[in-house]
Length: 598
Image (cartoon, rainbow, N blue to C red):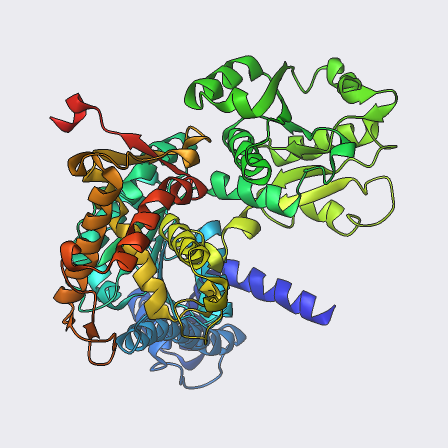
């Protein structure tokens, strides 16, 4: 209780200290002026108005506080209050300057750090998460009055004020020595500008690759830009990742609250999504994706009902964007105003023989108060059923805290669960969830699948070990292979597009027949040549055996001279590409002749 009251007093003082200091300073100077007037009359000195004003201002520097004769109480208070306010103001100013200079001094010795641009709710959570794991964190924030600055400084972050898109400032915060840059500014265009400047500056890096993660708030724009993550980057020192909070939130919401029926006896999986905004639409797409991964080639469909005021229009849009959606799910649109009396009977639509047909309800409304109200109304309708109702909230606390303590209790609200969007998505594992990282993991998994069983167990640093056990160097090699995929595909007239067709993982390249028509051999040879050239540029050379210390490798030869066993590995990698890309949310698309000629 004492600590809580102390925190309130500290927060109150932080908000109003300058106003209080100004008021106390004015009071002190006024009393000093009155005191000097009375003192002059008492000792028989006729001072002018300017004389008394001069003496009063002298109190600031403590030069005129000594007076002859009787000292009135006004002067007594003034000659102590004014210097005290002056001294405290100087301490505050010095402290602020000292903190800024300390941050700059600490920055000199900082390297391999996480650079976060923007200290809003997302930036604060990311910085806190990385600091908790022991990573050095540098934050760039343009607003010096940002309420989270002192909080994140107290946790160990270095905070530099300025425009994150300014290349001079990016140089000062040692972008070339940073491990990763994450831009979570409030504007998509500004985040893109930061990435553009970071790409230019990263060309001067002496070693390592800068991973640049930028947040794109508009889910549709994010989806359209995704191919830029893998295309068009010829800078080996720069790797771009796009992050959308609604896409990642949909994945996490389904992972932490899965709706899937475990056995066929339970019937088909049926979920209800309330609200078909940015989050709701990503929930539909992600539910279908996860269903496809779980069920494979089965013809069983997942049943998804969506409830929204413009449900029909939004479902039509989804079907246009994802033409194969109907092949995997039954998508039912319920056009209804949630505020209407009809919503009070909506649960009857999902009852059969007094048994619910729903596995889970996901409420994805933007308004937290409205979301909670909707959840409570649905919970009231289904209070006798054990159907989880998951409410999307922006963050923990606030309205979410009303239900948090009761969430797991056997009471009237036990069906309700809170999903904290920011807490679940703005975490330090953001680095492990990017497109390149996911591709690299699947590349390593495909490599393991191709090994004989007796070779799948090795020491910790062996490339055959699990991804988590791989050394940073071997992980980076997998990422570099992921970076080469667009060039490999382009050699045979293909490109990478965001996943629209869930059957694309079964796509097969042309193989056999004439050598010039064998796409697998063509792309396998290109992949080998790119791999070979990367090693040669890094100082490797042909040797009788692989030796990382001497930088020798027996396979640094042309495709024609490569052993047949190695050629088979390269061709298997090409055949696996459609499946690997589909798992990461992409698909292989043939470039039309008219596009190729542009």
